[in-house]
Image (cartoon, rainbow, N blue to C red):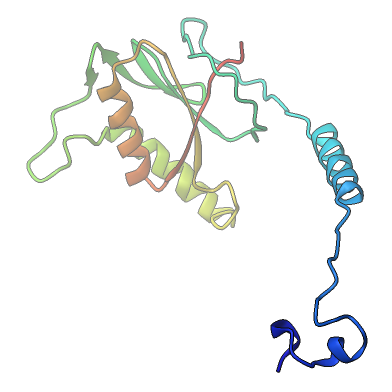
Length: 174
């Protein structure tokens, strides 16, 4: 018989009567270690903010989230225009982006002036040997909180078509 069935196993012959002794586990030391680890992780974490120059009439939404942001290519979508960095790209009126109508066979959501500028940036990075950099396909999108969502959707689709598939949204902290 085995030790677990109470028959004449090794424990029974050792005078334990076939019962396995109860083992207690003191969790106090483990909890002390985990609480200290948690304290040092929280104390070591510091949220960094990034000062980004934005147009004065651009009203960003508020957020309580605080993650560090690295300087990257900034795309600003306002109620009246779109800028890539400090460069004007095109005008916006309500839910319409003021660009020439799409030719037959072209994607209607693509914004050609924005696409051309984003591709120029992507090509310049590739020529400089930075095409494989971790931030090579990242764009920081600063969209006015009152901008129509169809405009933001068109900007996102255009950025994706141009090769900028990782988009970070910029917000203001309260």
